Image (cartoon, rainbow, N blue to C red; front, side, top):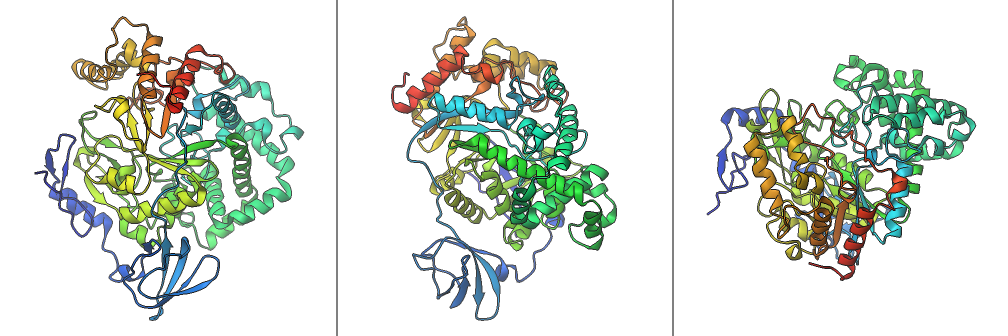
Length: 612
């Protein structure tokens, strides 16, 4: 019988199971430290925290009035009527209590038809017009190529903003915010007002001449030109209306960004009077630096325009990171909700014997409830907005997260539980409203019940050829099927052995460990002689993928051009992760013979003309 971890009143599991179902006990010192960090919720939290329910649900309360989103007042008595409107309402009890009532359909929106698409690291996908980095105009070009090939979606890396300072964060999975986009992705020539300014396009395009993506040089150049465009044009009434509609949330981001430019990207190091997002000192700062604050708001307006043009009418699945930088804008705005002195990671597993520390502070579960789930709602809604799809990185984090106390190793952490049913229902509500499909990245150690809960809520699983024991033909229909991810070898890198060579150079494992890992992955390409040319191996892998009955089939551009290097190699700190450009320019992708073959293969798989 599989042992069940015991969870205390702080939500901490006293033990955990590894991938081999071996039970490990958590050190008491770790439990004591996490209890201290989590703290004790107020005694009346259960009486004021949001109620998350579905139409027809019984509620544990007597007669009450509900002020709905549209202003209508409805009376309920013991249960929600079956026709009760979905949304975020306010419940007023007879005792005078006011609390949030979130009514969800319980299931995410899903399309009627199967589709295939490209997974794109946008920063790496450069064109001849790019300024050193793939941008939103390049995304538009990839989307048009995909549409011409019969694809139904494009999956992109997180585009969330980082600190607008030197030392640009390269990892898309450690943003300063999950609510706003990174202006480094702007195509400068298409920003409103750019036609009235000398944007020095030749100097910008010269940034693509280097072998790596130099974000510091790119942002310095783009910022200087964007600032000139802003002061010359300013956005006019269209920007002013947009800014007013976005309200305080946008103002907070723009304020943080302006302060970060002056005092650095970690709010903990700022002058004391600026460390809180309210107060007279902060208001005076905004008044004195109004132009810079407006500039950062204007950048988001320009991004909104270009993103809308880039996505068109195709589903673009955006990626939601598991967390944010501890010194960033979201951590500043919600510092009362995030836990101090810990970070999110993963316990030791077959791929990393030391465990992982991802550097993001976790949301404290009870504080998240006390904040009416607003930090979670805003992050989901903003990342889902305007594109039709969402991929939730490490979806297991909606159920539990591995907390690592500061100063300790990742192996010395523990799992902390979250109100998963509420969070899943919120995802379903936002998905339904946005008509956006949701994919959960359920890779690695997945505890019992997670995939069942995902299926119940209409969240697609994520199945990889490198990870699955079954052939793709046996994978579930309610899934996105793929071969690899940004953290794992490309087919060409695996087949040629170049990926192992690079791992060896960066010391990510012993020779024995690396060869054992490669052998285990190669086993997923059955009946393929070892002297098979690399391109044929890539084609074979995608023929296997095309046999999956899954709703979505996804292939990386890296695989489609036979790239040897993966975008990110975890544990290789001296490697230029997230900074490797694709060796094929965007304009040349449609004519690439291997890419065209893979497109036909996946299109046949979706339409039923698949080969085994």
